[in-house]
Length: 366
Image 1: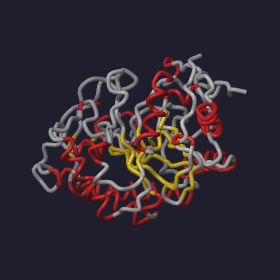
Image 2 (image 1 turned 90 degrees about the vertical axis):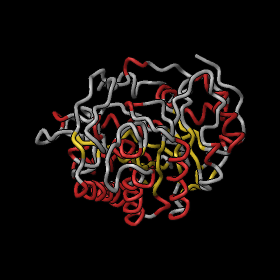
Image 3 (image 1 turned 60 degrees about the horizontal axis):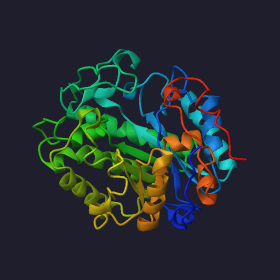
Image 4 (image 1 turned 90 degrees about the horizontal axis):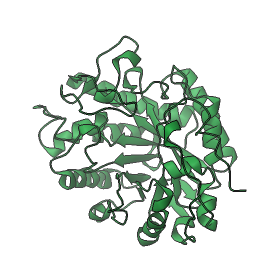
């Protein structure tokens, strides 16, 4: 066990976010963990997992969740497009709400990182342009070659995002949704210059490359309200899924300026960064704080060794802090942080399996 530092006041203090009154700023980060069934229906394991990590006035963000059958990217990753999936998620939200917690569903389309074999008719994966991602996915598999989306298909996907948000909030009982516009998935594939070589209204200028994300945001806000809508971004996201941006600060600044101008009451912007030991103290949102005036979630503090820096970051900025790996192995993480209790280590080998081991078998502190 690694001893956590004595608590700082900010991370354990209340904050109003959207229409939620949070009692602390410790957030469960979205974590792909592949515990749904083969049809993307959430299982009892997921009900237990999210219930274990729920706390009075705490916010949980779910794993990335496919908005349609052809948005899937991982075997046994969940969806939110079928009645069975909605009913499975309703069990999760009921369990979280029973403990006084809040929970947002992360809406996601894998784009070129998807798998044809997971699609109902083996449809080819899609992207902004027909450019294959380099490297491998979380399962060590290479990526498939996508085809470029037609403009008419883009509008269909906008409506898929909208319907998924309605399914999440109005049917499955989520408190809101987070739009996944990060880490080289479909929306980010349109934003980034390395994956978008289009010559139409969705390519070229930063205004065009951000158009898809802003259309999705508009559709979701109009359907469920700005106060129930958050968004995740990863400007300069470390070439995750080989989606890199030539002008990350300029492009993200434009995107955030549009969010601030049109939907200033959005719940939050979630900044994701892959941190190293050399940049644990870096405020990746600093350059954007004069643009986006609303609540911020900062991420990338992935291990117990980062706890000091996460607590200091909250103290310095007032941000919510999203924890991933350390929240997996410490289901009572907000309690441990508040009281300065030691943290249990995580087991990376069990992250992408399908069983309870390394998922719901971590002990509470007392």
